[in-house]
Amino acid sequence: MANRHGLATGATGTGKTVTLQVLAEGFSRNGVPVFAADIKGDLSGISVLGEPKPFLVDRARSMGFEYQPDEFPTIFWDLFGQQGHPIRATVSEMGPLLLARLLNLNDVQEGALNIAFKIADDRGLALLDFKDLRTILDAIAPFGTKKEAEEGTGNPQLDEIKRAVASYGNVTKQTVGTIQRALLVLENQGGEKFFGEPALELKDFMRTDRDGRGYINILAADQLMGNPRLYATFLLWLLSELFEELPEVGDPDKPKLVFFFDEAHLLFDEAPKALLDKIEQVVRLVRSKGVGVYFVTQNPLDVPDKVLAQLGNRVQHALRAFTPRDQRAVQTAADTFRPNPKLNTGQVIMELGKGEALVSFLEEKGTPSMVERCMIRPPAGRIGPITPAERAAIMAKSPVRGKYDTMIDSESAYEKLTQRVAKGAAPADQPQEESGGITGWIGSIFGTNRKRGEPLTTSQQVARSVARTVTTTVVGGVAAAIGKQIGGRAGASVGRSIVRGTLGGILKR
Image (cartoon, rainbow, N blue to C red; front, side):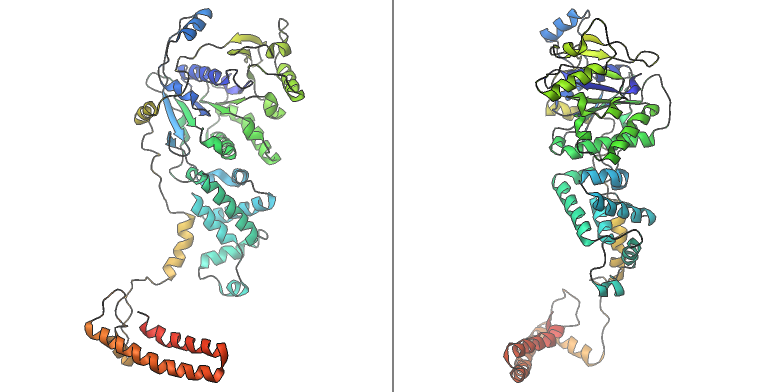
């Protein structure tokens, strides 16, 4: 029943992180891989041997067992590639809905983004990273001038895209500019590192070690939490990918993966209805793919009712009823449990100490058990963060070492849309054909028909110096005469233009 999802709630400092660690250890022992975000760095201790500290030993004995330190197979991940292996997705995989939320776009801007994705899909243009997205956004922007619309940009593929956009609706330069600025903000926050190749393969989350224990995949999220919208959108993307890629398995004996969504309120804050509907759909149907989703947050009111109804396994730490909203949260938490005649659930929630919780898990037939007041067992791994040296040693032995660490720049929309322009332009180092007649003869004297970068001979340097003196005097005199006839600043301007035009074509090199 672990793939029927769950919820762990409680006020700050009541022990939610330790509970998450205990649950992850239990799943790993039973061969179930786990994914969890490490918000404060404390969860990383699960990867090294626990320390038999007196308070842990005493707590274990009080619960009827001997404390046994243990360590668990762990893979560290990091969107920024600093404290773990990089996680990347392509822009196409992210899709316009999640990307619009990530960029905080309005309906009009989201519509333009959908058009960009549609254009790219229809023309087989792969959107892998930020430069691909910027290129396709520039492509759907309208022509700059009427003349450009009539004559084209010089790139037939871009011209065809700009004309095709009209059939999908009006896209203005202002709208495209707003999206581009939002991309720049995300790039400045480091978000562009998430987009590119090699993209994550979900099978790397579903590994077991030689002893049959499930790997615990830990996402370093302390830096990521500086951009809560990126954090929430990334986890939702990951959940959506699991839903779309994994086959139907019904109700397996144990889950293929358990997914812990810490700070779950960030997922639902200011989320539009379309996104909430998608979240509800994914949570409801991903169960049949063998994936269990456990939301971890402070307050049960943080989770919408439609999603809350899907969460059958509950761990409730202490809540404090200092405000009317807190009182509603306590009552909501109490009402979601199957009543136990021996407990006043609403009162007990406010009396729980650190490391205590009210617990209700699904029984064999899928019905929730009566709520019980429990002590949380001490974790076998270390409580608290590991050192950078310990993290580096674990990463050096990682089963995915080297697979994602180097970014690949494949041919995609950027290369294809700029390739036509490159092909149409003459290479800068292509030699010019030798010109004949008097032009060629003059060029041979003054060195103007030489290859770019080729030095002048001594005779050519002398000839050029003499020529510049003579022509400047002669042409300058002519220009001055013309300027006097025209008069004023306009005449002087025309004179200078004649000098530049006459000499520029011959002596500029």
